[in-house]
Length: 270
Ligand SMILES: [Zn+2]
Image 1 (cartoon, helix red, strand yellow):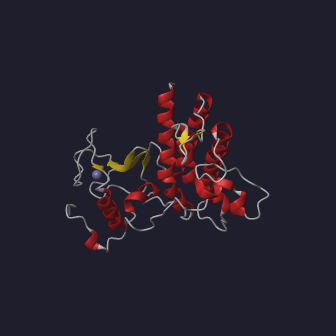
Image 2 (spheres, helix red, strand yellow; image 1 turned 60 degrees about the vertical axis):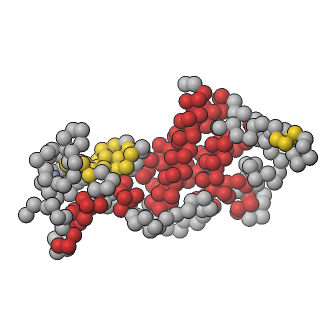
Image 3 (tube, rainbow, N blue to C red; image 1 turned 90 degrees about the vertical axis):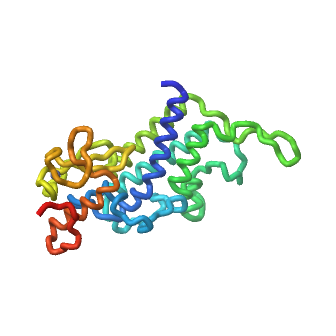
């Protein structure tokens, strides 16, 4: 693999981790998903300003108390991902960091002897989001040029460029952490039959499709004879994309509770 590709893949994995981290924090506080609606549709089903988490200033999981996590798998995954990325930052800092103490760009190691937990955690106290941004900066060789001081003199660069063997370690670690995060959230590439929930329009079997690079979608097994008011995909199946999933969720809710007639989709056959 060439150097540029490794940089690209590492940065993509780190950004994916940052983007999905709020979902994992929510997953820890939510019991494992019922059959329907699946956890994978959380993005779609949650109202836009509902439960929006700002992850930049969230304390890391390792420094928090978890008296009763609702989803232990998600907590285990979150702790493992934090540890992998924090350890990677330690490794890179040891190899390429020349910043002085007090420079906000500096990655500080843990200080087990410090008086309180946040101080003892060093830069880990800033959380996973900060660690991902910091590692990305090293992968992109940011701040590796001599810097001009106020008096005009040149100071040594805060960081050395990343040696190739460490770039490959960073890529491997970031992709492993991203893979675990996506699997935990059910956002890796997979197709999942939706059990006990036939298509409300034709009774066909519904299948949920997820992909880390695309919004989730659902298809009906029947084909074009299905009368659902949604387009056909490349395989001739009715497909509920991002915009139509809310309609499908409402139709399935009505199938569960027929009394809620006002939820009935207009195009449903009688
Ligand atoms: Zn159908």
